[in-house]
Image 1 (tube, helix red, strand yellow):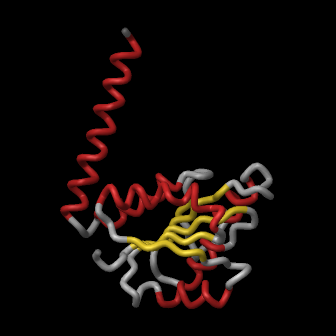
Image 2 (image 1 turned 180 degrees about the vertical axis):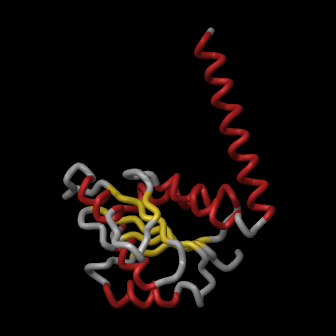
Amino acid sequence: MSKPIVAIVMGSDSDWPVMKQAAEVLEQFGVPYYKDIVSAHRTPEKMFAFAREAQQNGLKVIIAGAGGAAHLPGMIASLTPLPVIGVPVKSSNSLDGWDSILSILQMPNGVPVATVALNAAKNAGILAVEILATSDLDLLQKLIDFKKEMKEKTEEKSKKFKE
């Protein structure tokens, strides 16, 4: 397998049922990735090392999911020049997901995190592919085909719905 260019990290293994959607998208597009548990609160040294070394390790995009206080995406973004896509995860101790959404979305100027909807790791995977496709023509064509197929499926559903 090729060297990973996307990392999918999360604060806990309980986030994986949501975050695996991003992995499935990357697999669909043939984008090499790796996944790991990197907690901003329970393993801060690991998180610091991961974020600081991400670019030199060949990564191009980081997808970070977290629930509750959800500091992982923002802390990683503060330590790397790479684009970080945050996935707010509705956790068992969540305030209906709003705590995660706001923790990831409300970043200070200078430390952006692209934030997708609650539990929307699939969109995070697609956004990662879009970012990578800006410099990869083969990936760009796969993305164009994907969006065309999505359009065609929707048009077919519309046609059936009207019948």
